[in-house]
Image (cartoon, rainbow, N blue to C red; front, side, top):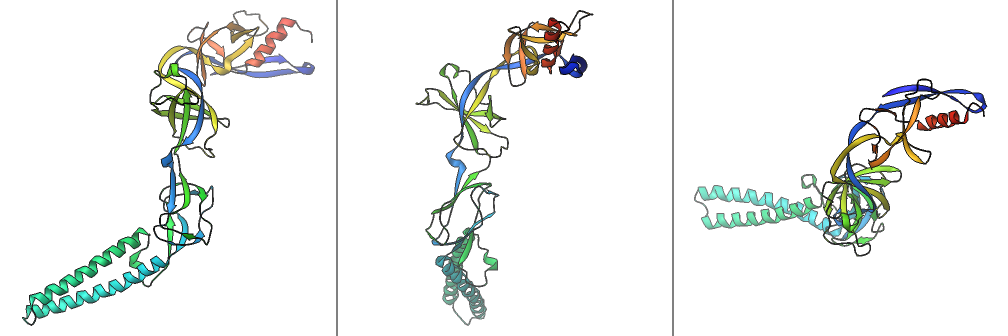
Length: 350
């Protein structure tokens, strides 16, 4: 991009040097677009409830509302008589199993020496297998509660609930020191990056929309790029418009659910036009113009307005008629050029 200095006579006859950026027109592909009303939502499967698998007593929270958590982070501490009994039974069964194994080996030796019968050996084997089965069942239940049985040396009543996936804590559902029932939700977590935009598309454009179309959302002064993932088969009853769901793939902080936003959908079908940057457009003498280098050698201002017709636009470029491909134009700071031209037309007085 070329930059040229232009001298302007400012207030108090002070000469100001302004750097004017110059660019060349180029062919740019424009997708047909329309403005939409939209809403930030989360699908129902984006909410995760942390529950206790057994009855107990809520002793402690390790998290707070609005706190970000990762998969495996501690969420809450539960005290449970059921867990105390399960852990005590596991320790007792483990000792019984070790004793049963020793008895089986002892009877097996006697059997090999002909001092006991096959019936006695089989009875001991069945007894050992039953203990092993009960031990395995208890081990599975304890491990489901994230209790490491290899470190279990004595009965314990407490266990910790962990986050199953990354997200943000939306609510603590039970007060501290209250009783909790089996499978009762205790903490609600909203999964990260599970946000969607629900856009309302006029019916006449329904056949143009395709999955994958870009939908740009204006949220709190920022542009969020989303892509259509679903075009719902049922028209929204309130608006009588087609609902298009688009996923928010980029990381966006402080995104609020159910807030209404402005969005623009860009359809897949595209056309190319000679284009200039949006910053080049200026409204001059009641017409849209782009300033181009002046052909008059002795002109006090080295630029002249060129009337253009806007035929397409996106977030950065404008397709125009009235300029040739590769033609130089003022791509920014056009206000100063406009001011200089207006001053020149008024003469050298104040």
